[in-house]
Amino acid sequence: MTPAGRRIVAAAAELFYNRGITAVGVDLIAEYSGVTKRTLYNQFGSKDHLVTAYLTERDQRWRSLVRAAVDAADTPAEAVTAPFETLRTWSETNTRGCAFINALAELPDPSHPAYRIAANQKLWLLNLFKELAATAGCSHPATLATRLLVLHEGAVATQHLSLDTLPESADLARVLVQASASPRPKERQPSCPDCSAVAPTS
Amino acid sequence: MTPAGRRIVAAAAELFYNRGITAVGVDLIAEYSGVTKRTLYNQFGSKDHLVTAYLTERDQRWRSLVRAAVDAADTPAEAVTAPFETLRTWSETNTRGCAFINALAELPDPSHPAYRIAANQKLWLLNLFKELAATAGCSHPATLATRLLVLHEGAVATQHLSLDTLPESADLARVLVQASASPRPKERQPSCPDCSAVAPTS
DNA sequence: CCTCAGGTATACTGATCTGTGAACCTCATC
DNA sequence: GATGAGGTTCACAGATCAGTATACCTGAGG
Image 1 (cartoon, rainbow over the protein chains, first blue to last red):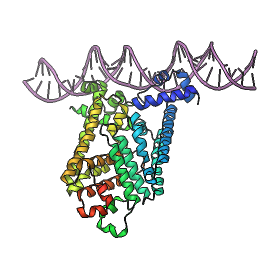
Image 2 (cartoon, each protein chain N blue to C red; image 1 turned 60 degrees about the vertical axis):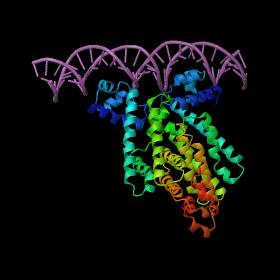
Image 3 (spheres, helix red, strand yellow; image 1 turned 120 degrees about the vertical axis):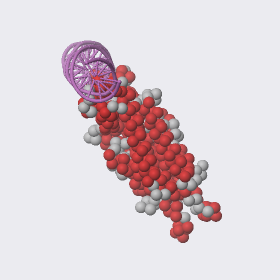
Image 4 (tube, rainbow over the protein chains, first blue to last red; image 1 turned 30 degrees about the vertical axis):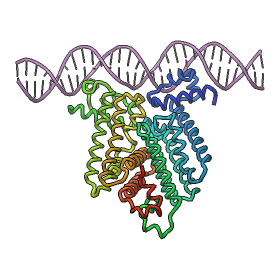
């Protein structure tokens, strides 16, 4: 991608995320990135393709941050909840929720590439949770992964409002991992039905 | 509100939710509701006011469904997770996520009335969870309510994709309520650290 | 019978939207 | 020194946007 192309994507990223995709015109993006509209169309062909490039770049950037957090975790159990640490720093500069969910809200056509990107992002995180849970020795990693994904997306979605739900979500995520990672000896299970309930059973 | 006004709000609700607020013009809403654009502006004054009316009506409709589900619950514990039952039926006809989160994605101005409506909706649900948890005798109802809200919003947010996370979210919600509603006798707590961890401690 | 609220019909403004056309510039590489 | 990629300038098309103006219709209540 040419230097002008990178500047265009950077400007589109900021404007699309903060003001909405439909509400931002290509003229504004061109002006914001110090580039002619002609250059924008020479590089991307259409606004839809620019939207796709914006979402793709954002996805790659976020994934690399998550990967770094996972690699920096001290223990396998902490690695499972590392994406919640990424979300904590990510939220400091991205305070308007999930860009992919927001994009789907504006793009009703399921055949738009944005749908694939958004779906793949969630599936990637779900699969990452599952693999990390399996590595950490958690029982029923698939069920645990689904629960962690819901918690993650819930924390992102409620971030709009000033409720500060992320710490609580991350706490619960760690509890779920602990309960799933260290199954109690069999003889203690009947005396503690809730533990076996919290630890996924399917 | 006049008959024409009701038809306009109904048409706006369907179009705004399914195609996006910015992407839908007032001409389309007028045509869709079988009404003149003049009538639309006589009733609502501006598109922004129509957006506010749309969100307000949707909020009221959803709240009454939640209240009905809570009232229909058999036990206080089941009442706490009744909103998840509402979400199950609600999602059958509303498959494009939370209309308020979607609206915030398109309306970047925090001074827009939509912000207040969306924030109040989430706060209302959070408070409902808290009151129901207290009624059911749950310990630390505030913490439990936050966790339930995150689960609820996470289930709504991931509904876009075909992941079917709602059953798992509702299951986990019920487990959390159970763990918080029936605290174990003190002498058993040391032998079961995970239970005390799942039951909110703050 | 009169009035008036609710609504219709149609035309219009001025701005903004995505996207294109055509000519020109600049600079590195062959 | 010719070529071509990346970029600029500017004008323009055609559509759509929110919102307004003017005149008219209709039916219920005083």
